[in-house]
Amino acid sequence: MLVLGIVVLDAFSKPIETEKGVSAANKACQSLEKTFPQLVSFPGSEQFADDVEHWTVSSEQNATCSIEPRSASDVSTIMQLIGRTDIRAPFAVKSGGHAYNFGHSSTPGVQISLSRLNDLVYDEAQGTVTIGMGLTWDQVYERLEPLGVMVAGGRINGVGVGGLSLGGGYSWKTNQYGLTIDTIVAHEVVLPSGQHVNTTNTSYPDLFFALKGGLNNFGIVTKITYEAHSQSLVYGGSLTYNLDVIDRVNSAVSNFSQNNTDPKAQMIVSYNAISNQFIATVFPFYDGPTPPAGIFDPFLAIPSEASDVTTRTFVDFMSTFGQGDLGIGSFGIAQHVIPVEQYTLSLLDEMVTQVIAFGARLTEQNNGSKVIVSVSPEPFLKPFSHSRGGAYPHSSSRQVTPASPFIAYQTDPDLPLASQAARHASFASEIKQFSYTIQARAVLEGLSRWDDILYPNYALADTPLELLYGSNLERCKMLAARYDPEKIMSLAGGFHFES
Image (cartoon, rainbow, N blue to C red):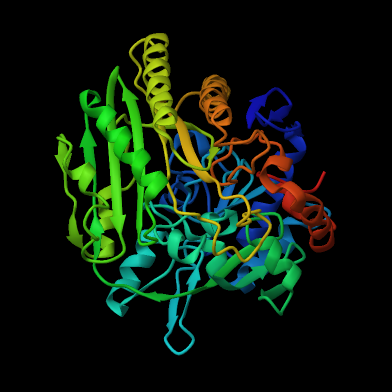
């Protein structure tokens, strides 16, 4: 949101009256401090800094106060207070702080950090793991690995359990088990009214459906139970290539995308331009200690600048990705998504061409300030084959993968919010054009459609709801009206079903 005079302007939504919002936030924070004196923090404290911090500067806001609930009961009290008719304060809920869009997990009001909801319980008899929403996926994996089990969670370190699980969730196990939402057994959720309920296929089944992709529209989820599966050693790592071998890399990626039939084999490919230098990185993964001959051999045969592909533990494989430091200091992100069925050689060539072109132009325009232009093909093997439904439409009848384009740019976190918002808006415009250009090629080749569903966790903030939820949208709107008749969740940012 952009502060201008007496309004707060979200770059992609309607204005909210500042004076009313500030007054409500101050009133809420005062009341919360009286009720939870040990849980509330204010600007200047270490806890507050931790609570409002996000992966990217462009997602952060300076809240009026923050609070760290210890239980669903605490969350219930917080929700009832924030939503009181004489308060109705703006708020946000943060799990891991990896949201790409400004205001989706940050606020100028009450920042709710779920960091203390960090329990993890493995039920061997039921074959499930129940996880608190304050954990990140790398923390989850570290705690599960000694037990010999894993869950189908996030692919990058630092990503919160909550956001990924409520938006869909692509995993290193998606080929085998589906999206993260396809492996969910139950949610513990505090409704906007403060009521605490548990959802399953048989208990509140409509809410269970809504929470599988419906993001933050239905309350605050405090824990989720997932199906667990046994975990052996895995094979994987990273391979880094220069531009002079990109033809061979693209040929290998295209062959993998169109011909791989082993559900244990996956990869992420990343094409990046930074300071007029091009780098391609391939992250191969096999869910077993030794992949069958031929799956990754074409990649290993290409001369690489760096390689650490080996047999290792799953946690060690995840360490390949670090903690999300892009190496350019404080940065902002403009991110979107391109739905693609398969990655042909010509489509991959187009991705490389556009990365180089956009990278060169934006580097020149930004006068030496570092800009990274990137797109990541994600060649899953029919990722919706294990679909169990949910608000996020992912029917097996239309198998698309979420190619991930983004632009990262250096920014000063101390700049006025208006200056940060203006800078971000320019890059958001660029990522739209970048994504459109690549998708146009995919559409031309019959690999994408303009009405294909977009993955909510990647999509830009002004993406129409119809492109996120398709034919499920009206049902989601109906359920939002049923479970949040007072529109409490509209006090938070995000993709909202309520008008």
